[in-house]
Length: 420
Image (tube, rainbow, N blue to C red; front, side, top):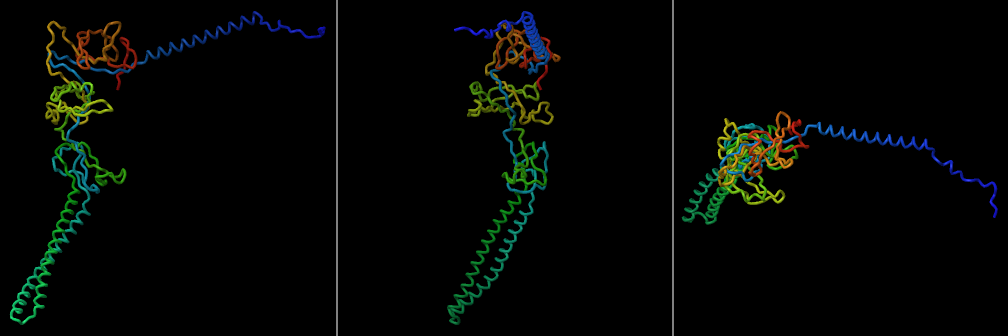
C-alpha cells in the first residue's frame, strides 16, 4: 500500500532543552537548596543559643552536719503537725447569732462562753411552762381546802347514819365527794410533774442558745458572725453556718506521717526520730514514735504513723523561738536503735546531702553548689548512705547549698534561678 506524500512528520528535535537553559535551571535549584540549609542551621543555632542562655530553674537543699558516733538515719518521711484534740464547736439548735465573745488566737477555758444565739422564743416557751406549773399548784391548794370540808361532811354523815337520823345514800354521797377531791388532787400533782418536765425541756432550749468551749485550748478559726444563722445541720443552703469556732488543744500536738508500707517494718513504737519543721529548717527537734496505726491505705500504699514531741511544752510556749502549730509541714528522720561508732581509721564524714544531689560524670562523683546565683561544679568523695542521704567525705561542708533538681543540664558557672 502506498504512503501518502503529504503525511506530517514528528519533529522530536523541537522538544530538546538547550544546554544554556539546563545549566541556568540547575544553578537556581542549587542556590535555593543552599539558602534553605543555611536558614535551617541558623534557626537551630539561634534556638540552641536561646536555650543555653535561659537560666535553669533549680531546687536546692542544705548539706547537713553528720553526727559522729550517733544514731544512724534509716528512713525519712514527710508529714504535718496535727493535734489529737481538735473540735469544730457548733450549736445544738438552729438560731441567729447575737453575740460572739472570742477571736482567732484567743485562749479559752473549758466551759467558757464562746457565743450566744437569739433566745427570745425559748424563753417564752419556758415562761409558758412555768405558768402551767403554777396553775396546777394553785388548783392543788384549792382542792385541798375542798377536801378538808368534804372530810368534815363525811364525818357528820357517819355520825348521823349511826344515830339513824340520815340515810345511807347521803353517807355514800359524802364519801364520793371526798374521794373525788382526792383524785383531783392526785391529777393536779401529776400535772405539776408534767409542767416541771416541760420547764426542764424549755430551760434546756434556753441553755442551748449559749455555746461553750468543750475543752481548754486556742480558738484557731471564727466561723460565724453576729446576725448569721447557725444550725447543727446544713440547712438553708450557703446562708446557714454549721460551726461557731474551731478549738485546738496545743498540748496534744504531734506529727502525722504517711510511711511507705515497704519500710514500715523499720518503724517501731517508742523509736527515736529527728524532726525538722519546714518553718524552722535549722532547728532539729527530737521525738518518739507514739503509735503505728494498724491499717494501710491501699490507694497510696502507705501506713499512718503518729510521733510525739519530746519537749512539747517548750515548743508551744508564747515565748518559744520555735513554735509548733497545727498543719505545719515537717520532715522526719527515723533513727536506728543501735549506736554505731565510726570504724577505726575510717575517713570522717564532713556532711550529708540528698542522694539526688550527687551526679556521675565520667566515673567521677560531682555535685553542683548554688552560690551567688550561679552553679558551681564540685567533685566529691562519697561514703555510705544514711536513709535518703549520702555521706560526703570530701568536697562539701555542712551548710553548703547543693542543687538537687534542675530544669536542664547544668554547666559550671552557669546562672541559675531558684524555684519558688
